[in-house]
Image (cartoon, helix red, strand yellow):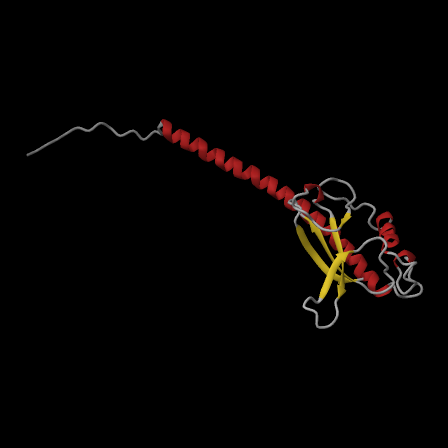
Length: 181
């Protein structure tokens, strides 16, 4: 039994459904690339905000070792004086007017604000700086220290333990460093 059946030739060209699949696939790739570009831009802004905070940490840490000398040149940030005549606000004004006058919040192009805390429900806080003073509690406490905002009226006549962080794109806190000033 010899059966020879002729079959029709199979087409190798893409069908209409294949072209739709290819178009959807290219659209998905383009969307992923676009979203990746947006995420990269936000990550760059967050990194620039972190660099602002790291610059402050570097300056304040260096000043910490020198500011108790009688001939320290930045009188607004000098330590060892009277608690009433050594407020943080004067030192911060000096820093923002001189060493950090070109510092900008990369998210809004304005000078960064020093805020109490990041709040994810307030997106206007992205890129702002959180500067906290850490105060030791009494020995035997369950909590070793308590953090609170370093406000303009706080005295800097003694050494301070500080924490600094920034608010990221989602206004969540990104801790940068703990240091002594």
